[in-house]
Amino acid sequence: MDRKALLSDVKRVVVKIGTSSITAGGSAVSEEFMDSIAGQVSELRKRGIEVLLVSSGAIGIGLKALNAVPKPNEVPIKQAAASVGQGILMQKWNDSFQKYGMNAAQVLITMADYSDREKVMNLNNTITTLLEYGAVPIFNENDAIAVKEIGPVFGDNDTLSAVIASRADADLLVIMSDIDGLYDSNPRTHSDAKFISEVSDIESVEAFAGGAGSRMGTGGMRTKINAARICRDAGCLMLIVSSSEDDIVLRSVSGEDVGTVFLADSAIPAKRRWLKSVNPAGRIVVDAGAAEAVLSHKSLLPVGILSASGPFEAGKPVDIVCGGAVIARGIPDYSSEEINLIKGKRSAEAQKLLGDRMKHKDVILSENVAVLP
Ligand code: GLU
Image 1 (cartoon, protein in one colour):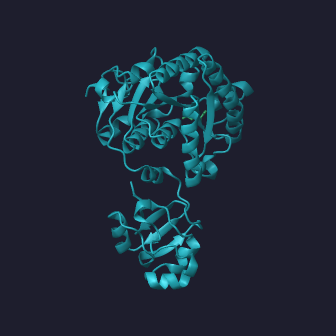
Image 2 (cartoon, rainbow, N blue to C red):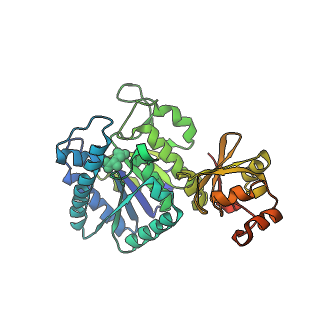
Image 3 (cartoon, rainbow, N blue to C red):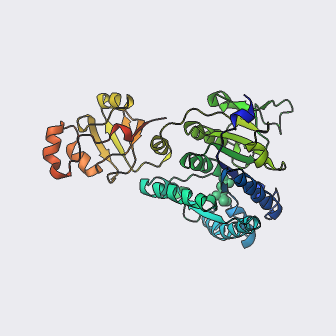
C-alpha cells in the first residue's frame, strides 16, 4: 500500500523511544539525539501534527548516576534508580525542547492507575490540555512504585506506548528501535533474513517474533507485536523504525518507505479498548446462558450469575468467567457484595433484596462489556 496515502491523514502521533536510543547505544545520555527528536517534534507541530512521547531510560540513567550494578532480581535498586534517572531524563528532555520554545511535560503512569476509570478519564483531560498549550507529554511507567511482585505492571514501554496511543486516539505509533523493522528471522543470526515492510495480518507474523529469550531490540519483537495488536483495535497504524537513522520521525510521518508498518482495523469503541487492557479488580462467574448473552453483546442479568469475588466496588472492571475460562471483561454497576446478594435471582426478587440500591435490572450493561480476547 502506498505509504504516503496511508499516512496522509495522520494528525496525532505517539513516538516511543527506548533506553538504547536515549543513550545512543552507550551509557551516557545522548543530548544530540534528544535535541534531534525535539527538532523533529517542533517541525511536526508546525505542520499541525501533535506528538506525544513515551520515553524509557529512567532505570538505565539512574543506575549510572548512582554507580550501581543490580543483580537481575534486585528490584529496590532499580526502583531507586528510576527515581533518580527519571528526574535527569526529564531535565534533559526539557533542555532539548526549550531550544525549540516548547515545554516537556512528565506523565508517569502505573497499570493500577490505568485500570481506574476515573483516573483514566482525567488522563484524557490532561493529554488534551497539554497539547492545547503546545506542551509535549512525555510518558513513562512510574517504575518507583510499580513492581511486578506486588501487582500487574505494563513492564515494557512498547506496551505502554500502544496503550497511550489507544487512549489518546492517535493515528500513528512510531516505535524507535535498534533494528530497522520486522524480519522473518533474526537478521543478526540469519544472513538470509527477509525484511517485511508491511503487515496486514498480525497473526501471520507472530512466529517471526521468536520465542522468549530471542530478544531483538530493547523490548524484543514480541512486545512490539503485542503493541501492534493494541494499536489495531484502536484504528492506529504502527511503525517500527531504526532510531539511528537521521530525521526518522519526520520521514516516518511524511510517508517515506521506512521500517515496517502494521496496518489497523477500524477502531473499536474506546471503552471496550480500555477494558481489554486493564487489570481486573475481581471476577464474576456466570452460567452458560449468561455467557451466551454476554458473548452476543447483551447485558448481564443477576439470574445467570453464580458468584462474584474480589471484593470489588461498583464501577471497577472485572473478568466475566464461565467454565473456568475468562470470556469477557465488564464494568458492573454493583459491588461484589451486592452481586452475591442477588446472584441467581430474577429481576423482581433482586429488586426486593437490594431495595433503593437497585439502579437497574442489569448487573453489567451491554455497553460496558468487552468480549475477550
Ligand atoms: N520504564 C523503564 C525505564 O524508564 C523502561 C521500560 C522499557 O525499556 O521498556 O527505564
